[in-house]
Length: 600
Image (cartoon, rainbow, N blue to C red):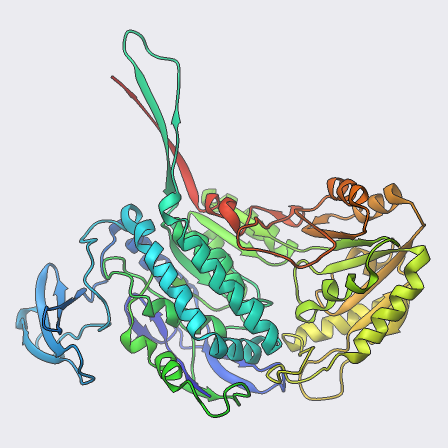
């Protein structure tokens, strides 16, 4: 499979190098090779991105390159107009069934500087819009309803390609990337597209100003320019979780992906281009590839039976229009600038608690921008002796190589089944196939990047030094790439580092609790500053409900784990953050309420 991608930044309607020309390598975690070179955003690039998004939100107009309209006649003939300052500067015609180039029939010489090329329309597939020159906030929700649905369809149509790229870029096993990374991204865009025409306020009865009367109602309005900073463990899914709600609410968007996984997100951005949102809503996207293409073996489609899909994926930018978002790759500086920027009204962040605290501080000091934070976790999982033992434990820890924000960071296993449980876990681990994530039979792929692998190895060394029992794993797999053995520790006491800190990797941390001591194990489970997720396995429904009420976490799983859904709100408490992704509650993170009172 060959996947072509733009190598320059895309800002406000044109491709351009990063302001200072810097690039960096993005690495394939399977073998440590370089996938491509990526533009390294500077502060100037961030400022340009925010300015473009602000202009799109406030004015709802095209960039300085002009406004493009595409008209289709009754006889299948298509016409295209490029307008600048309200005047036609070029006019081209093309037969509807023709695959040839557009032909320039007429243009206004005054629309360009002497000696410069004739202005060319930017995106030939843009259709005429009924929006006119109106502002995006007034029309964006209705527009995004159809465009968000179309985007979900495009992702679904190209899910095999996207899953392949996700595996290459992040190390996610292909089968998991297809079902979860891509599958839930599709569901998320489709779900929030359906909310666009259901965002509404309410009418409120108030005390009347007699002899006159009053009417009070509320309106839900978009915030403006929003920034989103997302992590590296679920590149596409995290993009969808946050951006779908943000755009459905009518905002414009600046997106900063994690530095180590830029590739897959850009393909989704290319699909967003193809959705053809009206040119009046100038959408700029900041893409960051330095190579034109890369090739991977396509084990699913060895005969290339989907050439049209691949051709479309490689040619999206030539045929696409844009949606109001910017993507700026760079760790540290770009994120800090976004949190401090006075023109950004909301920042959503998923990442570590220390960085979340810094972001919250910067947002407060700069302009009191609204913030939502999904931060670290140390999710407890309590396994009682009356549970279905075969269902408990494995997926809660080793799902997505343990690079999972809600992974069970500590297991509390009732004493009477502890040894049997550990034995079963080790037996299952030995059956797991560790290898190339593009191999459809692989169960466990590489960790996302080298620095993370080294951190996990140090985590295991610390556990051994403190006296925990290393039952299995704890080492790097002896092969190229960033592979780590699935690991099991037992005899973990409450004061140990392993009991307190998140590994964010394939490391199972097991502690015993006395038979029947429900309140005791709950006290230990809640003895953490984190509260993202939790779980309990038991056949006793009364026990399950009691435990779920007492666990201090934003999500509680009962006799299942990792079961998230686009309709169910997701977020943490305590130092795991605040605010929600997914569900109706996520929309409120990107809306403001205005109260209107009139007298008559």
